[in-house]
Structures are given as C-alpha cells and as structure tokens.
Amino acid sequence: MAGVVSGVVSGVVRIAASASFGRTAFNAGDDPETMLERADQALYAAKTAGRNRVCVWPAM
Image (cartoon, helix red, strand yellow):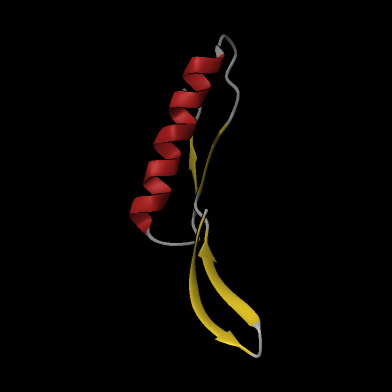
C-alpha cells in the first residue's frame, strides 16, 4: 500500500492511501505455488480495474 502526503494542517499530516487485493480459493490438489499464481493474477486484475478493488480468481 502506498501513501501520498496530501497536506499538513496544524501539525497533522493527512495521508491518502488506496489498496487493491487479489484472492483465490483452495482447490483440491493445489500447491502453494499454484494458489499464489492465481492470487497474483487476481491482484493484477484488481490493480487494472482501478483503486480500492478486490478481485477473486476462481479455483480451477
């Protein structure tokens, strides 16, 4: 997650932040690498769709 300082008012720093998440489900026979690959695909789909998104990549 990245933040950008948007202003300082009376000693208070305001930070604008956004977050994108990718998730997948466990499929019988999955290994960690396969699940991470699907979660990574979901994350890139969320980032492509815009800020503050959650995308789910289905188990296959």
